[in-house]
Length: 190
Ligand SMILES: Cc1cc2nc3c(=O)[nH]c(=O)nc-3n(C[C@H](O)[C@H](O)[C@H](O)COP(=O)(O)O)c2cc1C
Image (cartoon, rainbow, N blue to C red; front, top):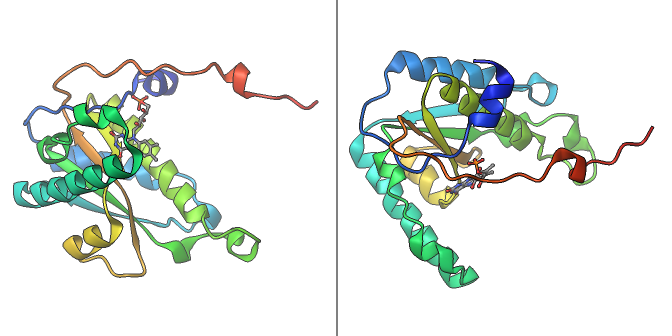
């Protein structure tokens, strides 16, 4: 698939079929992740692949608690209709674990030290696009308590579970999320 097609066609998937995703396919997606750019080529990512039902259900339960806290704090009404079942229904969940020590030259600059997150974000986007090119749906998911996930997945305190990628065959068409045209967001200085 052409990269521009993949970029434009990829949409967040929040409903998955139970069909398992083979290890070979998952490995291909992870390989796309590690080819992302990163600060000083520090490759600040590690991945945990979860396919077991029990662990996915525990993550789902914890995320649901986060959703309730979010609702109390934000009062956002749309959260009533926002179900998190995709966390337990996705046949595979890739946890992207970031290493804050693997940031780049930015650590010496005022307000720096966060470029490791940018690197991980690039890896995540690579994986979303690769999964789409392989005919799979994905969701970049961040509604969880990092400390709880650390304990659950035995991640040491120095590392940061940054995002989950829910992965599988899409059960339904995606929401049509609009975009503001690039020209409305761009200023050329020549
Ligand atoms: C950093 C980041 C965090 C996100 N966290 C969540 C999340 O916790 N739950 C969710 O349903 N979607 C999450 N998303 C997906 C966005 O809602 C989605 O990308 C956006 O609405 C645009 O829709 P599209 O991906 O279909 O183009 C996240 C996306 C990004 C980039």
